[in-house]
Image (cartoon, rainbow, N blue to C red; front, side, top):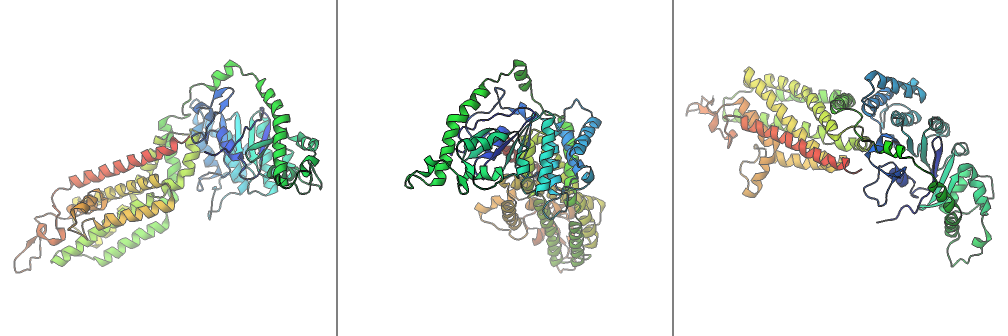
Length: 580
C-alpha cells in the first residue's frame, strides 16, 4: 500500500468554486475521484456527505467531469445531451420535458452554433476542444447536481477557451451549486475566479482557505516572490519546493546543507506551518457545521435508475446503432464483401460434381465460406468492448443504466447489422458457383451462415471483454482463429487423442459441417462416368468423418455457443460494474 493523501482538510459551500492546485502527482485527481465515488475499491478510509457514508444514492447528486472528454465521436452535440437526458433524468418527466431540458442546457452553455456537429476525435473532424468540454459539462449538469466535480477542465485549452470554460463553471456556481475542481497552473485571470483554494504538495496540504487570502498568508510566513509573478506560478513553486526568485524565512536559509536540501526544507516548513496554524482553525469551522435530520433522510432516499429497463434498452439500442452505423455500413467493408464474393464466384464458376476432384473443390469453397464469416464475425466484435471501456466506466459509474440493458442493446444491434453482409455474400456466391439449386438449400445455407457469424461474433465479444485491450484482444483472437481453422475439419482429419477436444469447441468445425449438410445428402450421386459407376457422396474422401444427414445438432451447438459466449462476456463485463 502507498499513502497518496495525508489528511486533506477543506470546505466549500453552495455557490462557491474550490480549486485544488498542486504539481503533477500531488494527489489532486486521486482526491477528486474518491470524493466523486470513482475510486473507492482500492483505497482505505471513508467518504461521507453530510455525515452520511457515500453510496449509490449520491450518484444522482454528484456530477463528475473527467479530464478526458469521454464522448461518442460520431454523435452530434445535441444527440449527446439528448441521450444523456433520456437516460439520467427521472421517470416522472415526459420525453418532451427531457428534450426541453437538454435544449435549455445546450443554449445555456453556448453550444447552439455546433448543435448538429459531430463530436469528432483523433482523425475525425468535429467540434473544438472548448465545445467538447462544454458538452461534457452539460452532460453532468443535466441532472442538476448539488456537487459538480471537474478534473483539470482547462487542460489542453488555450487561454481564451479556458476563460470561457471557467465562466461557464462560474455561472453554474451562481445557480447555487457547489463546485470542486482540480487545476494545474491557471492564468492570473482564471486564478481570481476561484472562491477557495487547497494547495497540495506530495499529498500534504500547505494551504486551505479563501483564494484571495493565499498570498497574504504566505507573505506572513515570509515567503514572498522577488519578481512579478502569476500567483498560480508562485504557489506551484512553493508546492514543488522550488524557492528560486522567492524570498524565504531566515530559519530555513540558515539550515546547514547537511540537514536537507533547501527546496525540501521550504516544503516541509510550509506543511508544518499549515498543521499548526491553519488546519486547527479549518477543522474547528467544519465541526461546527450542523446537518439537519431531514437533509440526511433526503440523501439516504432509496436509489433507483432514473429510467426503466425497457426505456434504457430502447435508448441505448438507438444510440448504439447510430454510433456504430459508420462501422456497420462502412463502404470499404461493403466493397470487401462484394469483391470477395465475386472472386469466389469466378474461381468456382458454375462448379459441377462430375469427379472426385470437383467434389473436393466444392468442399474447399464451403470451407472458405466458413472461414470468411468466422473471421468477419470475430474481428468485427473483438475490439468493441475495449474501445467502449471508458464510456462504460463513466456511465456505469454514474448509474446511467444497468449493464444488462447496455449489453442486450449492444448484442441485438450487432446481430441485426450482421444480417446484411452475409445475405449479399450468399446471394452472389450461391448462384455464381452453381451450388445446389433449390430454395430450401439456399435458405438453409443463408441461415447456417448467419448462425456461424453470430457464434463467432459472440466469441469476439468474449475475448474483448476478457482481455479489455484492443491490441492484446486482437492478438488472442488471431491465435484462436488459427487454431479453430486448423481443426475445422478440412485440413486435418486425423489428430492425436489429446488434441481432438479442440475441434469440439471450434465454431468453424460445426459451421463447416452444417454448411456441408445444407448442400449435400449421402445418397447424392457423382462421378457417373467412372468405370465403377456412379458414386455416393457419402463415400467421398472429401467428406471423411462427416455424416451428411441431419444438421440440427450442429445448428443447436452453434446457437448454444453464441449464447454461452455472450453470457461469459457479460460476466467479464461485470468486473467494470463492481469496480465502483
